[in-house]
Image (cartoon, rainbow, N blue to C red; front, side):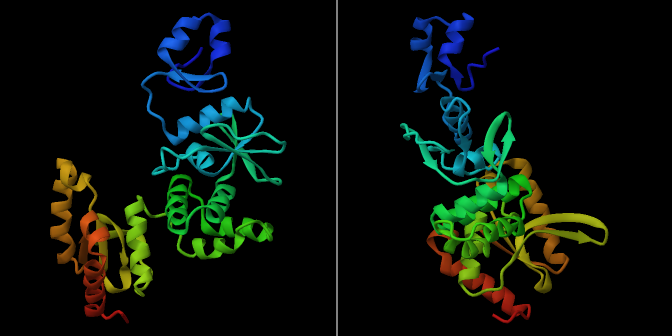
Length: 286
């Protein structure tokens, strides 16, 4: 049965008698050669990956952002072209970037060949702008449970690969605990300011009772940093939870530095100085 909310073969739909040529032209968007989807379905990296796989007729391997998408990675650029690796000479198509590559580590996800999470991370580290690579690999690790040593092991086996010089520097800053690009940006800002690298997803207990999980911080000095996204202000349940825990954490000896988009992106020096002062007051060598 054809799911019109997913990319599908127009030829197969016509042969099955579930659409007419008139309806195919009227109600569906032509994505690629013989690939259609119901009109009004928003494009996502996952949808683009599935459409590219269908376009390739199963003769390729999803890679880069497309592999990241099928592995469940969030926060990907919705406008990025799908990425396929082929062993033969095939030209790229509008919205699909095709490249040749030597043997890659691959797996099957929902019936599609894709690079493994480790291979995907290795490729992103070599090909993406530095900060975006860290953000995307953070999200990939968060989605799949991938660990940095797995990527490093693959890099060791891939000496001489194009762009490999960037990989160690990217991986040195990857942390799968980051739950969003702003959290990654926050962590990178603190590290680049010369502060000790923070630990992510810190769990706080009052005795044996779980109190909160903080975005990042330093257990040794009991200093936490929390990124307040939009949901912290628009979701009543989240807002109530925040009020409760921000009242309890200082009582347990934790200092909490909160940061939002305005402070992070427009006044980063103010935020960094607040964290530096809190760490210094707690005895950190800053």
